[in-house]
Length: 87
Image (tube, rainbow, N blue to C red):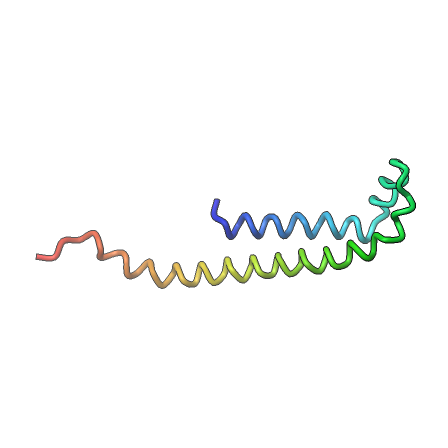
């Protein structure tokens, strides 16, 4: 596994978890179960910037993966003749 796919997987998973907490009452139910329902008023202040950050992270990971593939495609043709001996 390369670092680009790890970054992409992290961004996608974090975006999904943050979106679930933003758009469903999962986090409100969990906080009220634990007795921290007073914090539910501050969830938007934390979750919306986190969602924007993780969407940006996913976009950056996709960009890095595409540029790495593009750069590697150009290098593969140059490396084919390196192992041959020229007499």
